[in-house]
Length: 188
Image (tube, rainbow, N blue to C red):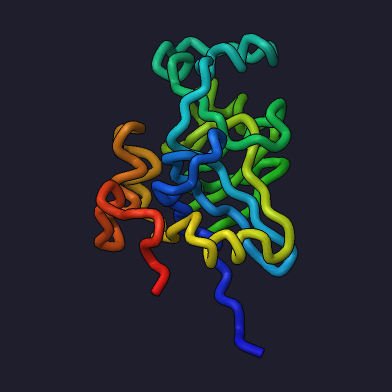
């Protein structure tokens, strides 16, 4: 049996032929991938709200307009009411946090939002509602079926690249001009 290379801490780039409205032209950060399945956060679909809207719902106050105006993303179709924060690692811990890599964590607890509101949280963060999930072997099959490309994680794509350019930039990291691929690309 061949060994499986899991893809945690990488980007999933939707192939042009992936027409599912949830995932068409998306790039997702793969936070967890193992024998049980996968969890990713879509990083290029802004929601119709700002972080200040979430703070208002949770009775969290901030004096920073920049923080209040931070975008919130639609992270995927699963648990849309639940918030996830991808962030740079800093000293300190949060109540519900998993380490993805040496530089990146995923947290889903209120305490990190309170720290962000007080400008005492991580320097870099992305807040999303919901996530994308796959059962055991499902993501692997979708990759075989040419629905996704995987690309290495680059912090600048996640935090600094304009949202409208993340899909192209993530694919370009592996030398692919994704706009020129056709449906049968990758199959010989």
